[in-house]
Length: 152
Image 1 (tube, helix red, strand yellow):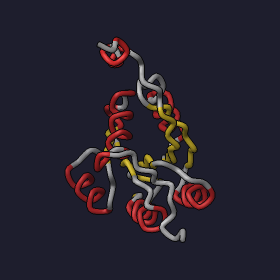
Image 2: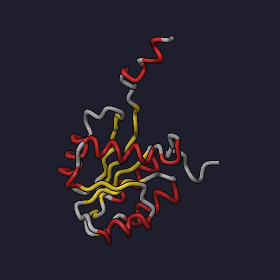
Image 3: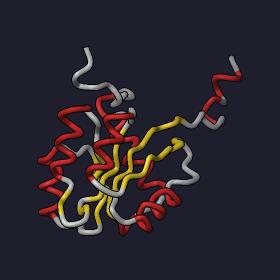
Image 4: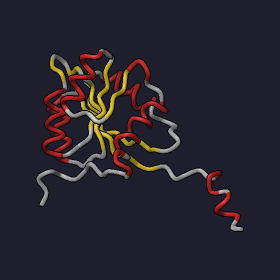
């Protein structure tokens, strides 16, 4: 009997680093999200923060990310067109973040192509980590969303 194999479940797994593009027009909300993400057991979420669609587009064009967490309302516009652009250009999975948790918002966002959903009313490390894991491991394996759609 191999002892190491029997007790492997007791060892703490290595935390994975995940590059996250965080898009929310409210800097206080961004800080709450970053702080709520601390202390996760499985993921080390490394954020690049953007306060507008234009900042987010520039960041996505400049750097590679594993996923994006995007607020539904960005100033006076929704993030639906941004979500669609992330899908089309970068194959970047998006977790929608909203304080406006209604069936209509969820339906609209899922139709636009989001891969996950987070309510601002339930921001705890387990919820954020679960949403990220659901996106990253959809289909049975870790996805690397950082591949560009236009790369050859």
